[in-house]
Image (cartoon, rainbow, N blue to C red):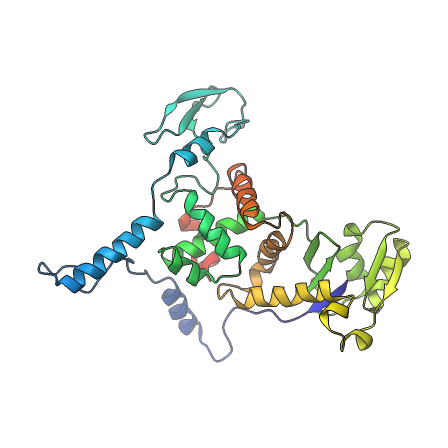
Length: 328
C-alpha cells in the first residue's frame, strides 16, 4: 500500500475570464449537435450517385448500431423478479398485459399505477435498446473516451455524457469509499478513496484505510510515516520496501508494483476522459473501482452492471442530467 497524491484536474474559470466569458463557454458546451445522418445535400432532390452511396452507407451503419429490442432482451426484462411497486413500494401488484414489444406490464393494487420491470431505473422510458449499452460499457471499461465511444456507436456526444451520468448513479457507493487519492490492494481486490487531504497524516490514513484492513493481517508498504497508526491499532505485521530501494527495480522485481500499477492505470483512465472534472472525483473513482475489480472478464462485468442497473431504483432524467449544474 502507498499513497498517491496528485492534482487530477479542476473546473471553474481563471481570474482572466469574466463571468460573461464563462456564461458564453457554458452556452457553447450546451450547444445542440447535428444529426449524425445529416448531410449538406440532404434537401437536394437530385442527389448524385456518390452522395447516395455515402448517405445509404451511413444509414446502414446507423441501423446496425440502433437495432430494436430483440426477443432476448424482452425475455431478459420479463425474467426479472419484481419485488415491489416502484412508486409506493407495495408488494400487492399483479400482471397487467404486455406492451407492443412484448414487455410485461404490472399494475399496483395499492396506488393503481402501471409499471414494467424497468420503471424508475436508468433504462426507464428508453428509446435505445439495453443491448446497445453492451458496446458502450465495453468501451468504457477499456478506457475509451466518451467522444470516441459515441462516434463508434453512432450516437450524439450528449448521449455518451448522459449515459455516463447514469453509470455514475448506478455505481454510487459501490466501492464503499468515503485532493489526494488513497490506493490499496491485495491479490484479488483494490480500493480507491478520496482522502480529502493533500498530504497523508496519521488521522487521515486511519480514516481512509482502517475499515478496509483486517486486524492482524500483513501490511506491505513504502514506509510512509502515517502508516504507523494502522500497524499500531490493527496489530499488523509490517513489511517495508522504502521507495529509495524500489525505484530502480524492474516491475517484475518490485514488490510494490501491483499498487504502483494501479496508480498508473488510474492516471491513464483520467487522461483518456475529457469529461472528467474534480467535482465528481468520487464518481470517477467508483467507476474505476468497478473496472479494476471482480469480475475480471469484460462480458461478465457488463452483465453485472446491467443486472445492477435494472434492479436499482435510480431513474435519471435527461433534462436534469444535462443541466448546466451537471454537464459542466
